[in-house]
Length: 93
Image (cartoon, rainbow, N blue to C red; front, side):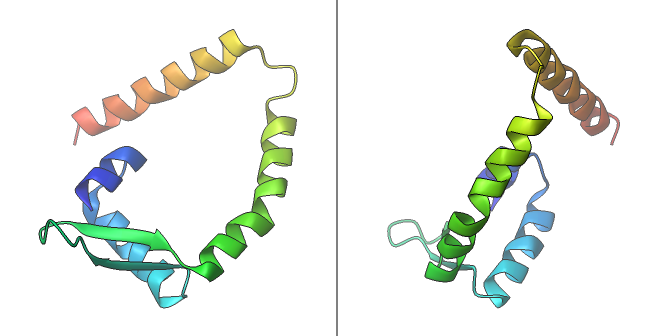
């Protein structure tokens, strides 16, 4: 879970709990990595993939609307600023 948690910017315990909920609702499955027993593989189920396919068009529409008239430079500045804020919060833990 640790690599996934780091990629998502979350702690491993939080991600593990979220994965458990998704697993209970049938959207993902997890199993032991066949070559590395210390690793867990998380993958979307058919139901999970179907949900992503159903919601992706709306996600893209909303993202496009939210970013309308925001330049690439401003979007990059926003990402840098938010990333720094997150780093600051993690440093102060």
